[in-house]
Image 1 (tube, rainbow, N blue to C red):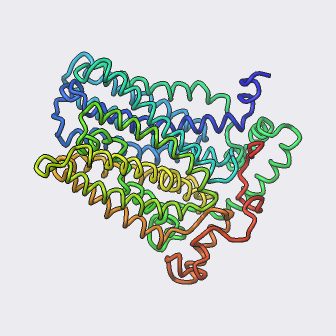
Image 2 (image 1 turned 120 degrees about the vertical axis):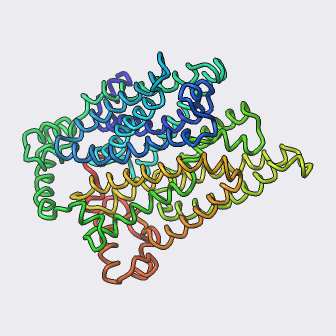
Length: 516
């Protein structure tokens, strides 16, 4: 039996591959824009200078598109199905990418406007994908612990980032920074992802859970037979019908989630602050403006670009520790220690950045500050990947009940988009005006992120979905959001002396990958 026959015929594996590739899509954009921003032909075509704030605006409007796309896609996913919503989002992503590619291709007049439109349209598609894919995946897939599965998928995100930067680096050094194809090729190469996913989506089943919630029992049975086979489909169908009856009596709307006093406002604030704090770690600056950071440390342009690629490769490899540790030591521990560790790295970068910029006056060799500065940046990037990349996307899927999980995922993407819009917009302005003092700002924001997580974010690993929801009930009874004061700090850490697998309730998703 060939590899294709053995694995691509397995719907569980196909869902994993599809979800991972979809998540890699938005990682590609981060790596794609990092060197495009410094391409002289790109800047000339757009009619802007390298230090013009519009450089950051072009990057950041994408995240506004993501925020709007998450709302539209979540409604579409609930009304028409997960697969149709994903298909539309992929098509919109492809359209936005194409508009970016043709901006200024024949006529430079209107190039900037078309690039803005392309970035926003592509953001609509990618934001929708980021909102719907976690919900679709959670309804159809499990691979070991919940954290391990999502961390592995987000390692694919870093693969996309590496792929984009590698293509960027190759064409930039082959064609030069004055050649238009050095920035157009990395853009159009992104079409690989939506085209591949669109051509593959027909093989995947619609969520049986969605069919049941829309009173389409026969269609749900077809999906279950496709997933489980004829023998187990009937039993699974009965389970989903029972779950639908119970959950339909507890409908939750956005007003219950986003307004103080709402039934799930506390859960929403944990979700919102997770995404805000992730943005405050400064990872967006490192991902999009990595080469400029290495230049600030004293490296020449070419060396800075190769070091950025090396940093991304290290990032990808270190993500392995994320899925090895996330279900063993917990989400909260990795986030808190990661934030404080990143704060230390940025404090070191503040000192070394200052020395690098004044090395001639102080008589300090460039390598004496640029090498340890690079090490600090590598470590900070790795700590972010291990401690923060996957966790803020995972926690919302663990604290909301099924009736509001899709809305919770959409809120998470919306805040992610708005927070990263602000960070990517302000970062180039910070570089141009604050230089190395920008690192000190990230030091302070990381300290805040670590403190807030320690104080208010419960440990959601090793517990069933129902147990995690109990934290919010307990916090109301104790009249506090402080984790240390709810049930004597029980939710500060993974449950001790307790079996973590096989717990009844929603801990076990619809599918279980063989051998997990």
